[in-house]
Amino acid sequence: MGSHAKAWLVEDESAREMLDRVLTERPFLLLPPLHRVPLRVGNVVELAGPSSSSKTHILIQAAITCILPKLWKGVSYGGLGHSAMFIDLDCRFDVLRFSELLNHRIMEAANGSSSKVGCHQKDSEAQFARMKPYNEELFALCMKRFLYIRCYDSSEFLATLKTLHYRLQKEREVHGVNVHLLLIDRKSWHLQNVSEAVVQEIRRLLLVHPMLVMATKAVVLGNKYSTNELTWNYRKWSAVDNPYSRNITSDQQLPYREYMPAAWQSFVTHRILVRATDDDLVNGEHQNNSIYLLEWLLPPLNSLDKFTVRDTGVFILS
Amino acid sequence: MARLANLETEYPVLDSTVRNFCASHGIFSAAFAEQNNSSERLKEGIAQVLSVIDDMHQPWLNGMELLEDAKRNKHVFPTGIQGIDLLLGGGIRVGQLTELVGPSSSGKTQVCLRTASNVARNHMVLYLDTGNSFSPQRIAYFLGKTINPSSAQAKNQFLQKVMSNISCHSVFDIFAMFDVLHQLESYLRCQDGRGGCQMRLLIVDSISSLISPVLGSSSTQGRALMTSAGYLLKKLAHQHNLAVLIINHTVGGEGGYSKPALGDSWKCIPHSRLFLSCDRGSNNYNVSILRHPSMASGKAARFVI
Image (cartoon, rainbow over the protein chains, first blue to last red):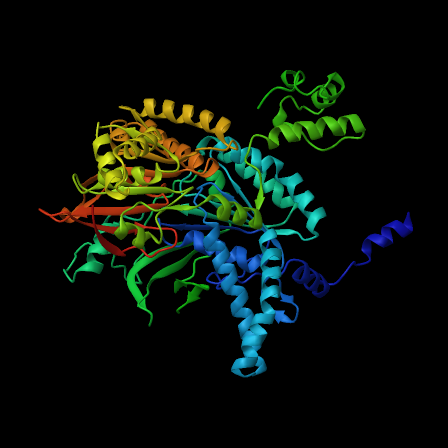
């Protein structure tokens, strides 16, 4: 009895050791353009914004960063090397665009490292041709780590969540890597009656399989700034002054109506608002990419990030 | 979720032992199965229940499988109109919903008829007509323009073959459309996998005249019908490899500019949205991209029919 009591008093590890352990097992993730706030597994991030404000793009960017390996055959790709799961409630995912972005990232990393070696033009071409089978192998490896499912209605979504636990266990056995990212893409929440069940299932899942959850949500910003694509197009065609353009100055707080049920609202730990602006970034190749504004609502930061979407992914402007 | 007792006839492993075990843990329906068991038989029973739930949702796919399916099945069909095909990078894509928006007499039905005549040479087409705008004479005219001059009999045979590939249904309200789409779904389920002429194009002319009567601000039933119609079309497009072409009208918006009908909730449902307009007094039409999965919106082109 005495030895048991003494065993209680002996410490397991110091605070510093615990911090070291937690940081290696559950590292912080910095995914652009969400790089202002470090995210960890177990966080639930909600991306809100009006339609066509690149929300799905940010999710895809996060998925690509997750499935790329950190280091592979001597080239550093800066990824996490884990699997990602994508639940598409919107049924609008374009896999060709996804594979394009992944290819661009792989080639960018490969070219970046070859140029560091400082070889001549001929040598770099030969090296590129040599790298091609490696790139394809890496591409196939990464694509196999991306899991996708479509749900056409709420009962399918619920059934998916309930069997997700076993699916994750199977994945762990087959691939040996954990799933670290769960992405839910939906434009509107028509699942009012099952939202409590959904939140409960995801909560239970996070206890056993720690993951980072990112979900998108479509909002309608205040009436004056409603996105009307036709007026936007007219502005692009002609130089006629259009009083209804979406001129959003950076210091305006745009209100939007929160329509999610309380169960979901309390479940979310981070909130972001994204919207498109009227400004365009004119590249040399006559390609106008729109500039998007990103604002952190929870935790509230007083800064607005500007970014644009390019072939290689999201590019931060400021 | 089905009661376990009712599932016993289909899955004999779920006999009374398994059910007693489940009852002792408070599990009465398939949804509550937990994995906390000791014997092999119970494990089998639980696995069976899980596979029942697994059947209720679509299968999980990984990235390579998705890419394979996209490359193998999701082709691009040219509409036969040069301006539009160049703008869209080939034509309309299988597995996606393409919406044509425009004021009245801006060429929407003409584009649909031209696309139907093009696709019907090799595949079957279903045309859902809400306003009696389907015109077989126009289709015959389009076909006549493109075939080589040969004997009248050969021409006739060709016309007959192509026209028999197009089926036209008149629907005048949204419930009739749901009926037709559900029948189409069961027909396609039997048809998939068999060789021969497959259905590849579905045209709905126009969806706004079906949905606008039920959309009202007092009840949410109209919006629910609209989104379930949208999801049904998406499901048909993706699972049975159809290209879906939808026609929508415009309504007045702010500042006198017209905007597409059916509101914000419909905006996110089609994959691509094209805006058509007509130059007054001539055969020249303008088309511009409102939304496209891989192209910047605002790109415009002109075409003639």
